[in-house]
Image (cartoon, rainbow, N blue to C red):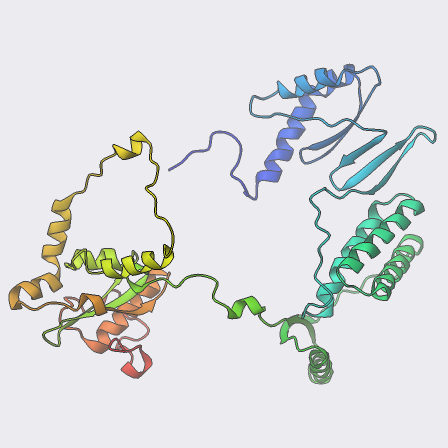
Length: 410
């Protein structure tokens, strides 16, 4: 068990709430002192603050006071440069002549200017949302028509970089401007009537214009037959090209984990079905498989990786070189001796076919892995298994027919 004495875990849902509580306590405690030292206005968003101070106030003194409040909290500062200051995603510009401040959009230097490319095989709504979000942000943040015009030109430039038609961008800008103007200058006095229709979400595969036609037909039919339903459609694009290519090396079977495995005897028909969450090679060694049984396969993989390469001895520190590994061989020997496979080899003199064992099933959910092992044991009745099942088969107490299960001999 681990106890966190200070702060909160990264990504915790309560992190922002606790940060807000702490900052509120800091403000209540220090605000009188900060006001005496020249703080005129103090605005905050969670833990980011925007502060107005007097011209003769000492910024370093103010910073040292808030940093002394708690040893784990350290504030940093950023002072305006040429009457400009960035705060979150807003660029604040101070105008001494007009005695006011103007705001426009601020983009970090790491902004990549990448949107969903216009030539991408995705629904048009996916492409539209990137432009719409930038236009809405410009309408909400830009304080003057000049800044708004500059931001619209920047949106056009970013859209053209991603192959968007200029007419498409201008259409969205026009629609959003009209909506913003109506929302600002029109007062709606009519009462809002809540929609009592039941919402249902339907997924439709995206096949360009055919998808729109299918959506309209379904909506037309449901409006006639089920007017009480409000069907919301969303389009799912097909898998990307990357999904059809294997970008990882396949794992050899003796290195797989979370599997149900099958081992049979070379000299008779006896077999064994088991499961393991660890790598197969570790579990088979506990059954009595020689540790060199899979050495040839490992060497073959390493030879392929190091083909035509100069293998040099790794540099190691003296601490690593002198480190010794202590293994408890007694426990391993006791586990091997108790294995039913080892007992079969000792009693009959037979040898198991370790190199040709089979991985029948794989599942990273432990209970499902137990169920699958139990179904296979019930269906094939391996002679070397001492138990008939690992968990009770509540849904299929009599098991499943072999035709519905994977065949261990294949």
